[in-house]
Length: 223
Image 1 (cartoon, rainbow, N blue to C red):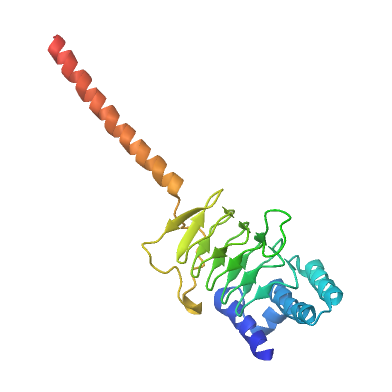
Image 2: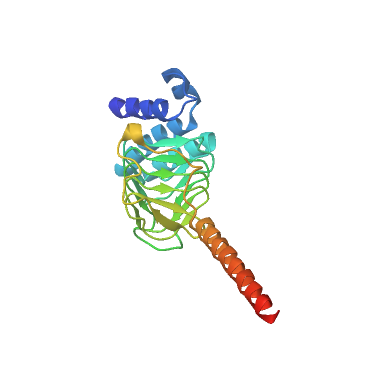
């Protein structure tokens, strides 16, 4: 338990440039508090003390603004940055070295029973306001862009942007491969719609030049 807590603290120091020391993380980081209380709630849940587990999770929500169902399975190295408004559903499974920003939701799409929340692979980054909804997997080393709404499976090593989420592969290269190499950039993400608009504008300019050329030839022939 203490080894896992030390790792939870270290990942915050590694990924957040505003984190100055261990004491500051322990006292001032709601993401750390939420993960710590979830581990306690999850222990009670696995022992069959469901009411105590739910009470701990609701208390955690009250003081941190982060809601994690006690049944959710969370690996090592989870970093919830800022955290306000983060929701992690009951059947969610989260791998190692995952980063989640404020306002993100790992939820379901209705009132299904059984597995209804996503499985998040290792080294995944879920940006601010993103919604990952459904019982599918987000592959290792992938990144979900800010405010993206993801409704279907994401292969490993991909970036997803937009509503609904669109997958943009990065030449089959890994987005991240280890804790120290996790890509936390949420600004310079690919935008396939913008790329298509640029291509359309380029073709329009080419056609306009061609039309002007043809009009010039017709005028010369008329003269």
